[in-house]
Image (cartoon, rainbow, N blue to C red; front, side, top):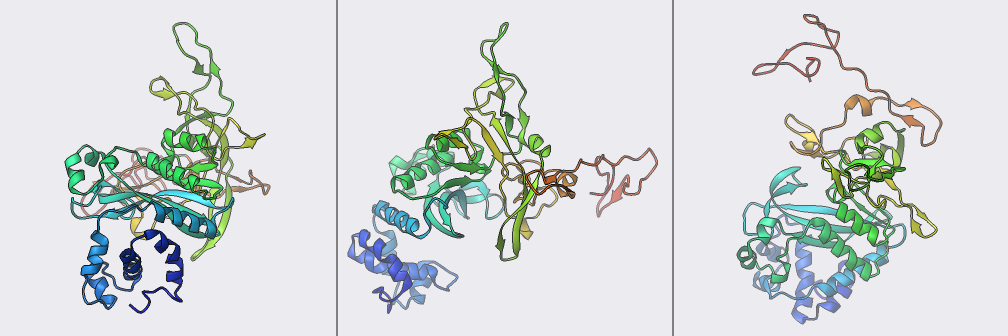
Length: 423
């Protein structure tokens, strides 16, 4: 209780503008204590251990502070946006949109469902939240966090009512729509940032990408490696014969195939706790196939606005830039294992992506990305992917130097495809 008045403490100085908008006197008294309990050294963050670590005689008053009737949190979000902008806001700052997952055991927590949990690297029972973080000068400040309600919740109003979900929130909304709504709130609060970043969980949505472009933002997002794209000079050919609509003059290609033929360049962007953070990059301009469907579930080229749009004369140029962005290597306990495969990065990064058990796109070919690149001039063309080696083949009844037709594991004999060598 000694620091409850908030005098001489960094935490209390940080809390002052937030406490001013809380309004209720008791909330202003108990909010600092509750935060100290959350930030304390105790591993258990339930109310009774927190009250004991704070030296309180009981936890009843903390319980009343937490369980009091709902109150408007909009003033707190507004103050948080102002403080974050003062700390790291500016044209060099980035607004990062991502997911946050909270693993859960039961079924009563709001929004809990079996869905992908990034904390565990697999589908699990958890809550999913859409998070927005303002980052500048290597300092991240969270500025938004909204709960995602899965469809199994929104189509069961009684379950939502029992969990205390407000009636106006029982609406099915995609994560991208939630992120755009939070983005509008930050723009209205005049938070300054130069670019919006998001992973492929959001970048795969054409509606989300269009929403960013419609707001006049510079952005770079992840896309699946099988995203279909066209060359930047694609043209729509007038219909002939029985055709009723224009068709493109070229077939779409997967972005993986497009980037595989490009020169790659190794870039180091900063030093981390375990050394320099580096990866190989390749960039080209394309038109993403996210327009109307025209044949065999193929899509026409989109409107041309997209990743890192180039501005010329105040207008966004009608080309896309498919830019490869970095991802951190997977944790050791999430490394690829039998039955699992790596999840592809944003465009295609030549590095170790995050792991995702049994789902997601197939990994890139190792020989294509792991081999050394030939040295050339120190520019964008300084690193070029080597040609993939031909698969190992052995004549019938013959075993090559690195090719074995079968091998024995603990339980059975198994041949390795395509050459019969142990994988």
